[in-house]
Amino acid sequence: DPKKAVVVKLVKPRATFEQKGLPVSAAIDADPAATGWAIDPQFGKYHAAAFEFEKPIHNVGGTVLTVKLQFSLNVGHGMGRPRLSIASAVDVDLKGAATSEVLRHALETASAKRKPEQVELLLKWYRSKDSEWQVLNKEVQDHLKLEPKPNLAKALVSSEGLPAVRLHTQGDDFLPTTHFLRRGDPDQKEAVASAGFLQVLLPDTTAEKKWQRTAPTGSRTSYRRTNFAEWLCDVDQGAGRLAARVIVNRLWQHHLGRGIVATPSDFGARGEPPTHPELLDWLATELIARGWKLKEMHKLIMTSAAYMQGSQSDEARLRADRENKFCWRRPAKRLESEVIRDSLLAVGGMLDEKMFGPGTLDDGSKRRSIYFTVKRSKLMPMMVVFDAPEALVGVGDRPATTIAPQALMMMNNPHVRAWAKGFAQRVAPDAKTTPEAAVKAAYEIALSRTPSASEVTDAVEFINSQTAVYQRAAKADPRQLALADFCQTVMCLNEFVYVE
Image: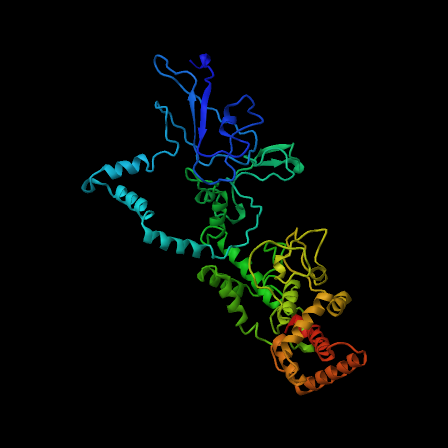
């Protein structure tokens, strides 16, 4: 009867090992909150303790034993794999048997009658006792210690079916039901909003049932996002063909400056109609046929006649189509802020191409600009001045302004200067490199072309004059400083930041 349970006193404690000042006898003394048994420094090893009952325990009909373990001194030290045993003998061997019950049974079973799992268990047990295996295994373990260890970083991931990480939220971690709210007020719930799809893209009101599958038993997620993804990519009855048009229109806009639909975020009645609807449909069909692989679509657009046109213009065509809606030329397009900064690092020979890992707020970081952490109170100056988009809203088309701070940053920013010095070291790694060779190397690295004769002449004259200036000022390494000036000038060219 649990109501008649009594405390049984333990006596004669002993253990395989005792920490100094924390013997096993302290585990059963009168002060459980201040004393206890510990095994420091022998962590990670098998340990055992044994106690005897002060009086024999016997009840008619059997006895229920409830064992309570209390950890009060150091909650960081616990038992890895606790096991309790009851024995009638007094002198119990604390080290226990060398083999488990299952292994002993396999050893005692005749070899002809052993099951495959028993044979496997015996082989695994015996190999650890074989001297040759021990030598080979030590070599393997020593080699594994030399394995490169990745730099792990914690990341906050929000997903269904996982314990919520509380930040500054209140109430339930997840809303089991979504409601229509009057004027967006969570206290004014009007009705339950069921999972569904855009009705304007459905052939009839019952079609959405095709994609509304319930999650299988035991699933961690609700399958609502899976249903949405399947509807979004369904080219026969779902939104697949519209999604494909939107995607290829953005790719076209990225490479040619203006989308086939000039309003990339609005394909509806209020948006602009496509200038080339047949081309838009064909590109969408190609995307679907190519398995939605964007890299192939990039190549298709960049090898097209429309993309490979020159950027020259004439007044007659400008009067006919000033906005270039009909792709009679390819307008010069400035690179995005991230690409400009990455290009500066690349030509300077300082770009860290390591992928993945945490972001950073260090504007002197040598990693790609995509790894900048976006913090509203600490935006990267170079990103902002070259029109980096607002990260909290959707941006269908980035602006490309031309303002004085852009030129001032390229001329005066200490990071740009450091990259220019790295660039100079690349084009002239030693004193044997002539100014002419350095100029040609700079043009090839930064602009992907060879300089004209007049450009070489002007650049060499500039380098020589700057070298003389630094010599008169008694600067250290005047030639390299002059080359850095030239390389920074190349970085400031429109040709470096524009795709023409």
